[in-house]
Amino acid sequence: MTLLADAIGSLEGASGGPLYRRLETALRDALRAEVLKPNEALPPERELASDLAISRITVRKALDTLVGEGLLVRRQGAGTFVAGRVEKQFAKLSSFTEDMAARGRAVRSEWLLRAAGEVTPEESLTLGLSPGAPVLRFHRVRFADDVPMALEYSAIAGFGLAGPETVESSLYAALEATGNRPARALQRLRAVSFDAEQAALLHVEPGAPGLYIERRGFLEDGRVIEATRSWYRGDAYDFVAELNTRA
Ligand code: 16G
Image (cartoon, rainbow, N blue to C red; front, side):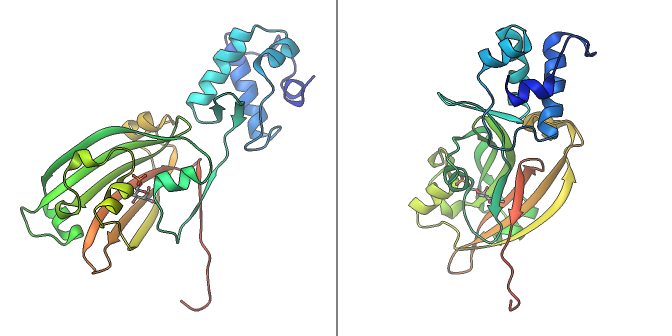
């Protein structure tokens, strides 16, 4: 009998609808109690099924829901793991793709918008461009191991890229290729709670906590190249910074 199955105990007497729902609740409680620590592997599905005397289909259905919520992560060929929080260096000017690749996580994005346009009055201020100047907009839901981690809305000064389609998976890789990757950035962060639309995109409950981050990226010569607004899931990220007495 595995530790996890032990912690779950009998689902027979448990209240709360169909068996897979009761298992979901029991698993959520076990994860909250840290019966399994972040990044630890779950026992194989068939073992859980036999320990709990339920069908494998029921186990799979409950695990699927928790994978969808981002509490568990499936890794091809390796099994199911407890999702770990991502530690992100706040002082490092890295890209989402680099951050995730450094942790061995598979990155993908869903495009909400990838288009060229003219700066809005607000963008002209943040990007330091004259009214009517071209701008490229990239709106994405960003995933790691198929878990939605963040929403990112970037506006890039039009001179920075040949066109919106030059960005495939990494914005910073595309900017690097044209010699326009930001060399320095200013970042501002605040706590938010997700509205219904954001929550649906990030697979969390409306009102769930998040981090709103604004980044303005500059080129060596001081021109602004990037203005990005990001909403990161509060349950997935720890922002870490090294502090010195002398600024
Ligand atoms: C990060 C940056 C974002 C940048 C993106 C590029 C934060 C808070 N934001 O998510 O400003 O546009 O990386 O990522 O770190 P990409 O090269 O993977 O598209």
